[in-house]
Image (cartoon, rainbow, N blue to C red; front, top):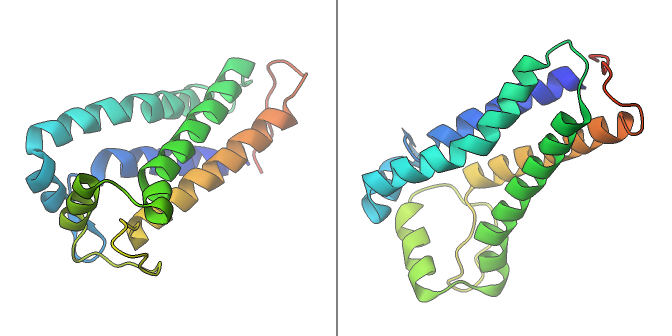
Length: 163
């Protein structure tokens, strides 16, 4: 389980850092995001958004095949929960309840031409397929981090067998 979590938290870090900087037709249009909010703001947001997943990855690498201190397990659970909550706040609340006119216009501009699988709800912003995939990754990582934490509950630092 720890091997799977390590691989997926590294994948999450790479995606969080890169997704607004690259273009993959139909999935990710980083150039559109940059056009709407500006390249400087995208780079600043990317740097800020890379700190917490970067720490999670650093812990995964530092403690590879070593006893995992409780603070590492706690950090992973908290970080993964916050990432999941931010996805809900940025995407699913506006999708279900509607966003401001400005948010709706920005999302339409930034994600125009990307694949969407959720049905339209009026003019509410809706997550595209790529973001839904990221959100599933956030959920899986949160579940894995929680399972690792509860597996270690009350045992103090210990090695969690790689399975």
